[in-house]
Image 1 (cartoon, each protein chain N blue to C red):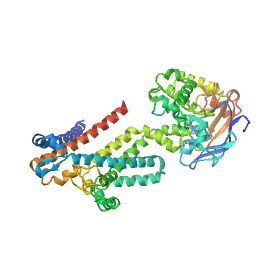
Image 2 (cartoon, chains in turn yellow, green):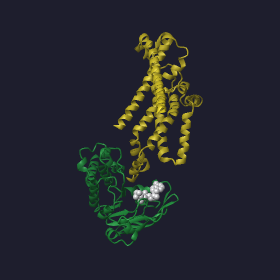
Image 3 (cartoon, rainbow over the protein chains, first blue to last red):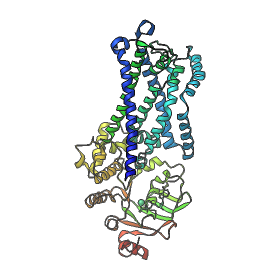
Image 4 (cartoon, helix red, strand yellow):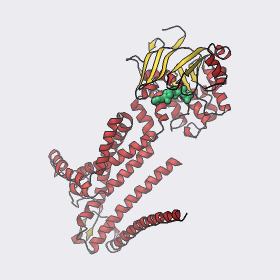
Length: 280
Length: 260
Ligand SMILES: Nc1ncnc2c1ncn2[C@@H]1O[C@H](COP(=O)(O)OP(=O)(O)OP(=O)(O)O)[C@@H](O)[C@H]1O
Ligand SMILES: [Mg+2]
């Protein structure tokens, strides 16, 4: 009995410690970005002009860069990941599925800097050649992010499909549905919540990804909607500047970190919302 | 047209799952517009036999068939035979009700939509008609747009029957359709099947001897001799004979409940 109590206390301590750590990070970032809000002001912080030398701390270009590259990464990565998941679960013979599954797991284990490096030496020159641009920008970042979200979406998507009751597939096939019709009209709709969660988790990964994006996005502070023009993201801007920033500059970076944190929290809440709705 | 009164003719059919022989030398003629029941102890291959008739065994890795299964004069295991077409003609109701996680309406409209019917009014008509035939319409007519999963087990099973009826099949296969239902729901389904047999050929697997006796015109008794042996038909004939004066003593022992 005493031992059980010990273990319980130990687990409780672990849980409280992680909770405390998260709380502290949040409080710290909030506190450090407070000066930005009071001294720089919200209008300046969310403007399009980023010239720290001249006291302009607008993050709009980076915010747009983050949203666009995340969207682009999902636009490429989600269909690919869902397609792979369907292939793994419904089409591939089991031995082939195992090989692919291992491959995807391996992909998840590749450090992002390696993926970014591939982007830098292969993707960027390739985009430069076909578009005549410098090659850096949202397009390159999107492709790199697509590779990074692929394992998440594939693994969770395949898991979702695997957990569907086999009776559903049987019912559909027995009605005369082809394999493709069964996938499209029965399995994907039945698993849509789980697949949505997979995509949102992938999105979380894409929004926070730093290294690989920084290597291919071009790191300019230019606000642009052109996917082939160098720009920046919140993360790439943070990692580029955090070494040297002091004073208002530093506070402005913390404000960007706060925005990043809030974006991630919105995603987490939306996952809770999706899964809650399913249970209801 | 192939006219001998038989819908299905199975000749010397063997079924294997991989190396395992599940059924051996099955010979069975299933009469049109009759109810044929398949009975036998658990594991003797009743479900497997039923699944040969709409080729659901194709889903099982390593499933293989020998002999012939003929529907209206055509071998359904012929290389050129359309499986999708077969399953439109031969519908199936499963042991566990398995409605799709969609609305009641969309469940019934599933088949017609598969076959390309898009017109709203036509679909509305088919849905209403099928639900009526399945004796479910009155209970659900005000909630066609709600989830089918909110129905009771008995209602779900009738919905599954409606879903099959919606594509106007020629044959309906039922694998222990009442095993999860209470006596009242069972009664409703039995009444329903008796009504449907004027238009459909019905094959039903059941563990319930009374149900087989009450409901069916013909009965096939399957059995395995020893553990690991394939299942075989011990006796097949009209239900009355099987239940009142069976020729095989194993049949008699089974139907009187003395083994299996
Ligand atoms: N998908 C499958 N793969 C391999 N073997 C199977 C498969 N389905 C059934 N079997 C085997 O085939 C034999 C017959 O099974 P089947 O389900 O047809 O029996 P049944 O008569 O319907 O039994 P029950 O009355 O319990 O439903 C059993 O030995 C079973 O283990
Ligand atoms: Mg069975």
